[in-house]
Every structure is written in C-alpha cells, then in structure tokens.
Image (cartoon, rainbow, N blue to C red; front, side):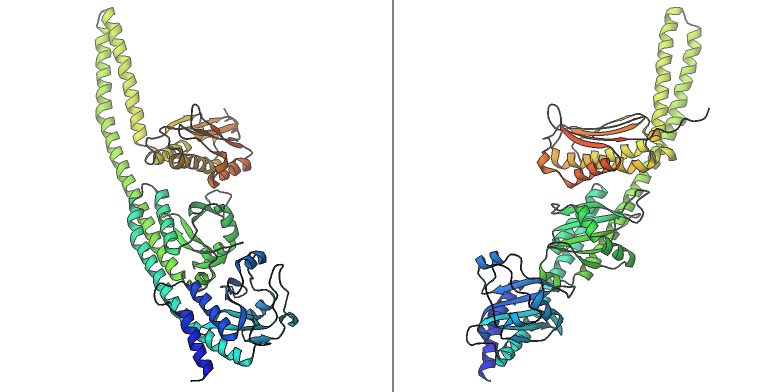
Length: 535
C-alpha cells in the first residue's frame, strides 16, 4: 500500500467515524470536506449538494471560512458561475487561477480571495450527489494530479458512507411514517367533527415528515370557482399565509391532482413542498401538502414519495370511514326523530284536538263565568297544539329546509356547540332563505366557521353569540364573545381571509372590543333585493 492510499483511508476513517451510531448527515458532509482539505492541503473547502431539479445547489457545507466571513458573504452560493459549471460538466476540474476560467463570475463583497481551485463530483450509486470544491493550496503553488487522484478516491469512499447514511435515514423515516399511519386512525375516529379529524391527519403528517406546515386542500365550492382550490385546514407554522403557499404551488398541484401522482415542488425562498391526493370525506377529493424547510441533504435523500402517498391513502380511507359512520349516525337520528314525530302526530296531537272539541262542547253548555275560564283553557290548548305541530315540523325537516340557509347556519352553530363549553346563542333575523343568494351562502358559512373557530381556540369565553340578519339590501353576520378580547397585532390568516371575502363583495369586516369584555366580529355585505312576484 503506497502512502497516498494510506492517507486516503486515514482521511475517510476520520470523516465517517461514528456514522453507524447517532449520526447527522450534515456532520458527515463536513467531515468529508475537512478530510479533503487535509488530504490536498487546501485552505478552503466546500461540498455543494445538488437539488432535485439538478440545476442548482440546495446545501453548501464549508470549511476554513470563519463565522464573521460567512456573515459578510451573506447568502451561500446556489450554483452560478464556476460552481454551476461543475453541476453541468460532471468531471474533475483543476485551475491555477480560477478567475481566468470562462465560467467564473467573481466573488461577492466580503468573500475571502481565492486563486487555485480543484473541483470534482461526489457520486452515490452512480449518481452525482454533489460537488467538492477546494481552493488555495497551502502546501504548493497549485493542486496536482496526485491531489486530484487522492481526493477522487476520498470522494468515492465518502459516497459509500453517504449511501450508508441514506439507508439509516430512510429506515428512520420509514419508522416515523409507520408510526403515524398506526396512530392516526384512532385519533381521526375519536374526533368530534370533520375539522378535528383533518387536523389530526395534518399533525401526524408533520410529525412524520418533520415539516413546517401541512395543508389540506379542497376544490373551491363556489359556483364561479370551477377548477380552483381552497385551503380547507392548516397546521404547523402559519406565519406564511397558507393561501400564498397554495398560489405558489397551484400549477404543480393541478398536475398532481390530474395525474394522481405524488409530486415535489420548490417554493420561493427557503422551502419546498410535497403533495399528494387526500380524500377529506366521501364526497371531497382534495390534496395533502407538506411544506419542508430547505434541508438540502434531507431533500436530496428524502425518497418520501411512497411514504407520503401510502400515509395519505390510509388517511383517506379513515376519513371516508369516519364520514360514512357520521352519516349513518345522522340517518339513525333522523329515523328516530321521524318515529317520534309520527307518534306525536298520530297520538298526542289527535288526543289534544279531541280534548279541545270536548271543551268547546262543555263551554257552550256552561254558565257565563265558567264559559270564560273554559275559553281560556281552550285557547291555551290550541297554542299547545300549534307548538307540538311546530316541534313535529322541526323533527321532520323537508327537503327544502335541509338545504336552506337557515338550516346551514343552525348546523354550523350546533357543530361548534360540541367544541365550546356551551352551545352558542343563535339569532336569525329576516328571510335569509329568500334574500341570501346561493352564491353568497358559502361565504356566510365560512364567516361563521372562522368566527366560532377563533372563539373556541383563542377567546376562552363562557358565552358566544351568533347573529345573522338579512334585510333588503344588506346581510350582517356577527359573532361575539365575552372572552379575553382581540389583539390587532396578532391578526390571523383566517381573519385576513374574511376581510378579503368582504372586500370582494363590496362589504366591510371589522373586529371591535365587546362590552364589558370580549370581542365582536362583524361581517357586512350588500345583497341584491329579489324582484317582486307578479300578482
């Protein structure tokens, strides 16, 4: 064994020591750069990881540059100039003066001066993982062919170590996704409503992927929004507006939905996203979007397509099962209510009506003083019959009532009654079914959901009041609570959405302080007055 081979093996052992135990891939890459600098006598070294697009660098591990110098340089290189030349031309390159190369684009302000250069690819299973960059040889005037051969051998052995780390990381990720797939069904089935069920899926996906944000995307239900999507639910870091993320991903999301394939897309700035199909219930075919930080090595090695697709497939089945079970329970409740209504109509109402006829007969044969008292009892009995009939009508909603605006409002309020400490107090004024246009109804539901959701999560309120008032020309939705109040400095993305919805409809949206405490959310939009019916 010659001296060069011994030095290479020595350098590799130092670079990959400890990788089989508690490892971090970035530490491994840094160890490879240090070993290459030691082996070649370079003052500066770096390893740039090539992104999934194969056009630029997504991670840049450096050696020899101090923290102060790194701060002065600013953003790390992404693969332009000479670095980009090596991405395209996957072969070793030695230069006595890197500034003389045609692809050289100079250095940014604050960058230390560099002259001699040696660059070569690092391959993992025959594919280029990244490039090693070495500059400023300290043990001679320039890098030699022996330096190139030694660093090439180091890069080959480092590729084996990186591949080993890939296997360990893949096993770790697989274990996280399997755990998420095992625990999610019970959490979804225990959820009180669909919103909590979808939130459980998103949080499980975040834990498994180690992402920053997870979104549940669904087709927009608005009649004039065919082919567009909306954010149904979001979890994780919401400092970046989920709607902005959706807009950035819209082309890739359309392809993912059309092809039923899991896709990867890069986001402006520091981040990327993986997306796949997700059924939110038996009727809604949406998508699961997971936003990941720009961790180049995790992105490059993250063969998570199968993991994400399998998890989303199982989550879809569980969400559909939960929705089906909820529908079955609702059908059972409706059947029981129909039975009670039938018994009330055929038994109680008829008996009360018969009693009323008997009282009327007795009243005609009674003295004046008794007759007046009997008439009062008869009127009370008539009022009781009317109340029972109204109760029967409420128990057996008609087809029109089930799809009315009033019924939708009552359903939303009842849904959040299970989340809040007490059911919200609801007041509906005016003919909402007649005045509210069908195109406006989904806006009303969204406003009430957002207001009730904020009250349940942030207000810590004991009483929540909901008011929907429709008058000719105007619709006003109000959600008020007696909680801790609202801080304008902490405007949430959902509230911004409500303001934009109101602006689109030439309306207004405001949040004011309640009396004596709490907050009042008011959403006000104009509505068109229907034409008068012909006589």
